[in-house]
Image: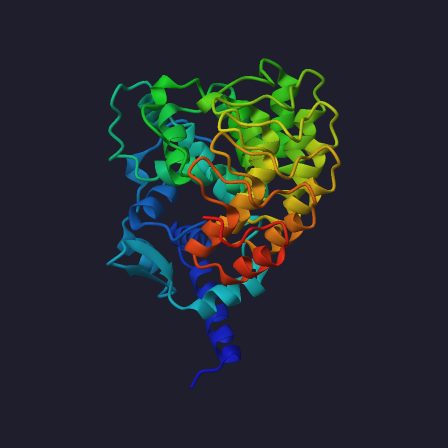
Length: 399
């Protein structure tokens, strides 16, 4: 049986053979390996073929450059295979991924390379023309989804000067409606017709992805509204907090005109976004501002502590409870409190933390007459039931 060392020797020899190929075969083979190794998800065959057809920096995508998938397989000398059922391309074996990860010198700044290719594609005339079409037909641009969703993920990991220039070119105008829709669908944020919402500006987009260099550049260039509202009235700070991008949050807070407590359409503030996502670093940064209200409630009457308790984010709950001005028993419009949410969803550690606060009233029912104890019982959270029953203030027969 071939051992790991022998496989490594085979992979090394094969990669050298790929690099030694004539003409464009070497570039196609190595770039295909780079994409498959460092993409955020397994690329589809048509996506990979389009990615390898991109001419860096060109504003015109030449369909004549698109290689066939069989050409790519041949150029990779047997190191990649096509999963016909899923229509994706993958490495021939997981040990090849291990080998490539152990030899980072094979690919120089791979995420930067991928970001540049994605940005070039998004800046192409073919893609930009789609944004102006009432009902765009995306069948001819299979690479659009990946670029729209992941260019910023790769750019955040590695960003070259070329990539930064391409990003600024893309973001000097609002992010295209179709790319925004694809991004939000991926993030489970899209609802209804995007055309009914405010544009997703370049600063909103860079803040969403958390790309510090691009955020700084957009602010320096001017013309970006720090408090500008986008989808569901969210500001750049809201998006940065939502995704836990501490560096961008600090930069935006450094702008004197920023409103760090500005709520969106649903009354959600950046602190609530960070608390709901469990982003402890962002929560600490925002709580360091005197103009951030840690007890501010959303349209549903829920506080940052409510959102953290609901999702069981122990670290965030601990940070908030250390504040004397945080109310651990504040009820929402349905009469449900942070202890209620933690007990209902089975977050034992959070329940324990809240039980240490004397002002917490565990007998207080919601508008349907349910208590934390009755909900924990109904949902089968036995350990939490025992915890609540051990608290003298709890009435065991409360419905």
